[in-house]
Length: 405
Image (cartoon, helix red, strand yellow):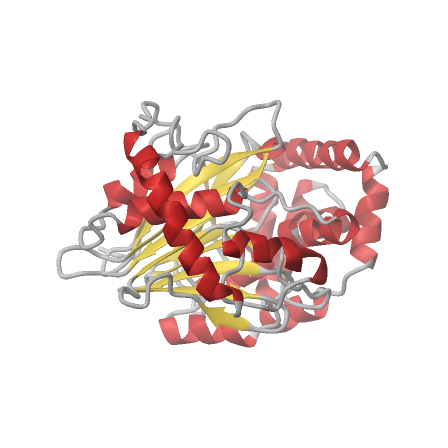
């Protein structure tokens, strides 16, 4: 990408300017352990969906109503009408049925046992794709996830981690899906929201996936949606299959994926037309991090091209995604030979910039927050640690795999 060289120069200059400011910030301290609800899912896709919908029927009804209220408030239009127009404007189902048929059946099961319409449950899965639809209408950039990946060393396992930032109406509906192994798929832990199939996750084969929206990249109305991509990756038993899946499928929306596989980490910027691997520092490929602007993938929507040039050149130095990127870069590149779980957690708790913090505390008057912060430990004993809400207000709680002794 032609912007990359100027991006690196600008990032270096801005990092130098901001370094002293970052070092002066005190770490926010979390003091409360708030468990995320765990639901156990067994059987085939349809059976898992039935159990999900039955166990969380009340929560699903509540969050779907809040979802529609949020759509109506933002659009000034009837939510059901907007959802119907969105549904009619896309054709994701052939890709879903081709690549993840079991998960399509899971969505059917959720609809049947929760009492919600299939259209509503189907569209609720399409979090990023709905944002793409809104972007086509109003061209807004309003996404705030931050991700980190660290490869294994002789002294520590590999990690991938993320602050998952989404709409405020989802607060209180955090859920951890614990999917039992079957003949085709390994055991899985999946961060999600009531009535939703996935936001990120890790499996017992030590394959984990986190993601950040890259709204500037071109999307597709007939690609595979993000939530199904997550489940497709987590169904794999080895790194080669997971990477091949990410590179082979047609992507419905622009995303950055951090894939962890046993002892290695990979970062891929994916658009409708290409998937590009991104390595922040070629001399240290075992450290990756990303926020919400593409750096290496040039498959950009025309209406975002000019602003992206300004972000990558450093001209738009107050851009939220760039500010967070530099904060993560500063913290993770300091003493880069010693990357620990505590360092990653401190980075995810950080608020080095008041207007654009990595950690976004819930505020009912604002539009988004850190729904959960996750740390996936990989290697021989993979696990997930996650918070209920932002990590400055909730401790990380550990969950281990039952199939690993």
